[in-house]
Amino acid sequence: MGKIISSYIFPHPPIIVPEVGHGREREAADTINAVKKAALKIAEEKPGAIIITSPHAPLFQDYIYISTAPRLCGDFERFGAGGVKLEFSNNVELVEGIIRQSGKYGIHAGGVGDNIARKYGISRELDHGALVPLYFVRKEYKDFKLVHISTSGLPLIDLYKFGKAVSAAVEELGDERVVFIASGDLSHRLSHDAPYGYSERGKEFDRLLVECVEKSDVERLLGIDEALCESAGECGLRSFVIMYGALDGHALKPEVYSYEGPFGVGYSVARIEVGQPDSGREKLDGIQKKQSLRMEEIRKSECPHVSLARQALETYVKHGRIIGIPEGLPAGMLEERAGTFVSIKKHGQLRGCIGTTAPTRKNVAEEIIHNAISAGCRDPRFSPVEEDELDSLVYSVDVLKKPEPITSMEELDVKRYGVIVKSGMRSGLLLPDLEGVDTPEKQVSIALRKAGIRPGEEYRMERFEVVRYK
Image 1 (cartoon, rainbow, N blue to C red):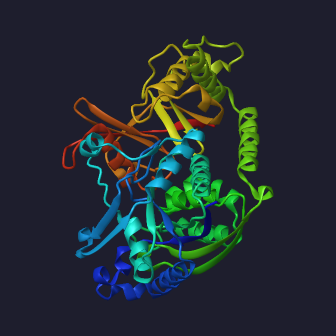
Image 2 (image 1 turned 90 degrees about the vertical axis):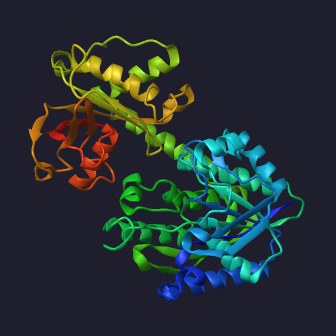
Image 3 (image 1 turned 120 degrees about the vertical axis):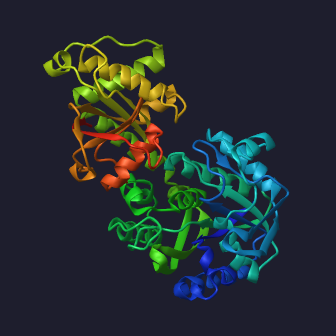
């Protein structure tokens, strides 16, 4: 029976590769020493296969990409070091097993055809998230086949299940010894010169992540606040979650080799020794039960606005009909008219959001009913909600107050006001108090993109307040 013998967390900044850094790699000396230590340990372990997950491989919302070509190669040309090339044999047998096992968990995974690759400009070469760790491993050890896996926009719990599928596929491989590398940086917002600017929550995220690794606290990792991830500009969480799914049911002995934050980005290197399987250590069922209890509490605490949105979408998805206005609603929902937005999340991720900037129905209740159905079934960014998703959805409803014209961004407050931008017949709206939108400039920039208004074009602005129901 095949076995994952150890697992590693590797960062992937190209600058730590000497041919790319040209001396600047010395600013990340702790990280370089740690990745070299990890590479030497892998060489001692002599795995026949290495599985690597990378957040920079082709990324899909509800599909996990796995490289299926017989040979896997890539280089650092886009980082000014095209002469540094790596090539590996793909462990096709293991790839096929992972694809087969993931289907048993209801998760779609595999490669992409030539037509899709051309249409969307998908590169099948190894990305830098894979190349940087493998650069250091290859210096010490070469006798292995590779499996290259992307992350996905799927909920974290589904990525964890996919990790279990990876483990099941490994177990089918005779007596193969496998090392799992989860490639990922931590926060990208640790300083004012960081790639995405500074956020005080960057250090908070990094502390939490390292602590979870040190304590093997998988449940805390899966329950991490989405707003914290967004504010921190994190990179590797999904890669790490897949890794922990692959280790579910095993005794784990973690060791964090290093953590530092040069260049405004958090880098951590860790090794996790994997013990024997033990059904008493399996966590998936317990995690799912806790999530079910949490959803029950959310349902019990719903206000009438949110309950109405949920009932409207559930009825439409299950029975294909639009509900009438139920009895017992507050008078304001029946007597007032206003634009409303319905937002739907699944496991902390946006699943749909549609609304009206001004009233289009006879009252707020009707506005909510129709916008809830549109948010779940007609948001062009997502596929329509399916019946088996309904129990996992969390709703919020924004009732908009009348917009007022403004002449400058100084009149905006991203926590209090939403913004509407207009140019001719084009308009874009952004609600207030959204995760990751922390300045008026960012708020207006997103609204302009939504409206299709190009930089330099003239536009008008309006601000509005909302009453948000959760």
